[in-house]
Length: 123
Length: 111
Image (cartoon, each protein chain N blue to C red):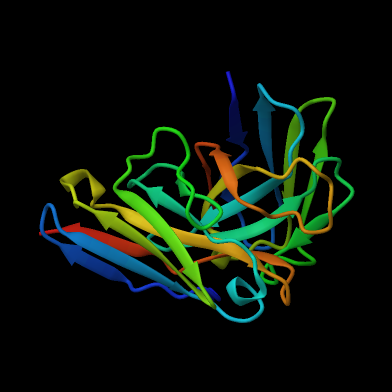
């Protein structure tokens, strides 16, 4: 079955760190992104990584604090989040991109989404 | 803040046609990047509705259509149905920011 399953959310103290994981199955490596949605708000693209992991892009709001990476031997994409603030509280979705080529522009469109994992940053 | 602007809400009676606009700039839609649309039901992940401006994935009803012109794009629902009353987002890429970008989102209401 073709699917992505994201996990790793939870309650984090302000200033703390958290690592999210996204396990993909049923398809060869494609570019992947993390997209978040704060409570009651719209979608915000967070970070993307090319199919072979050579290229990454980040939203300005997380650049320098978040790192996206992947281990294709484990079919897994990670989002390492640090220096978290209340503004990072959101449901984080892992999303499979339609891009199979590894190019510097790592975002095309998203044809498969994980169910989302909630990250709450609070004392 | 989002670089793609959508109306917060649109509404129509069952059977009517509604259009959702997505306004960008010369660094995203106007630069030639394609626009894609997603439908999101409450508490669930977004679902791809339209890709490459006007192409429906398999299983998406024909009442949904998309278009793009200049620095803007539109999603049209022809023959509005009660189950269409959810949120819709446009998405593209911004070359100045080197970021994927989403629209501000539009809630469709069926009167």
